[in-house]
Length: 104
Image 1: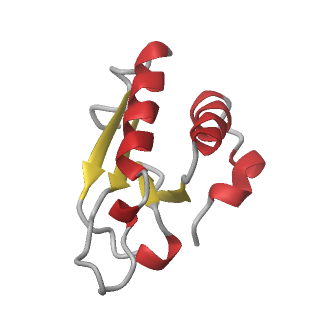
Image 2: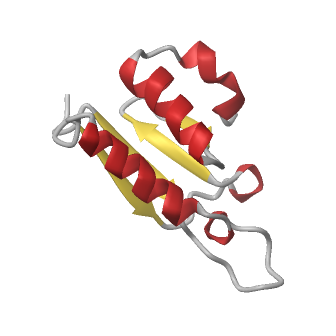
């Protein structure tokens, strides 16, 4: 396995007004920082890395993030979604419990 057990990329791309919707128009940056903070609080900062990314080209399903090495895509739009993601995907590995956050 790689350096981290999971590496999560959160799209924060912002397009010019009038162009198609983009992930950066939402509160993605705030939610990414919350996710990063909570992972550190859980003592998982050396195992799980959270980074912002440029466009992941899934704008219509956004805001999106992708977690590697699994390559699982999520759309996290609220603080509750961050909590659900942490509890069910990171801590318990119960991805079935957060189907509503998955992106096809």
